[in-house]
Image 1 (tube, one colour):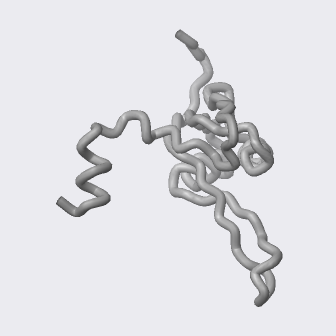
Image 2 (tube, rainbow, N blue to C red; image 1 turned 180 degrees about the vertical axis):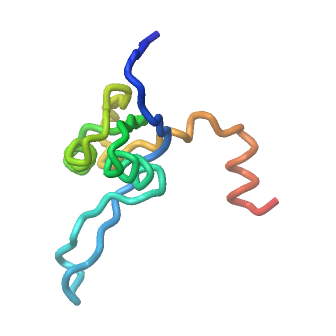
Length: 111
C-alpha cells in the first residue's frame, strides 16, 4: 500500500482526449484534454490547492500528451499508473474495471 503524508484534493477518474478539427477537410486537429475529472483537478490546482489525480493512463503518444498536460497543470501524478496494452492506441478507461457485469449490458441494450 502506498501512503502519502501530503495533503491533496484527491480526484479519481478517467482521462479523455478531444480532437477538434482545424480544417474543412478533417486532416488536421487540435488536441485537448477533456472530461470533468480532469477539469476539477486542473481547477483545484489553479486555485492554489494541491490536487492529485488517481487514474490509469496508457503509454502511447496520446497518453504522453495527457501526462504532459496534467504535469503542466501542476497536478500530482504520483498515484496515476502507466499501463501498457499491446496494440492499444488509446488511453485506458480506468473506471471500467469496477462496473458490475450487468451494467454494461443493460446500458447498451436499454433493458
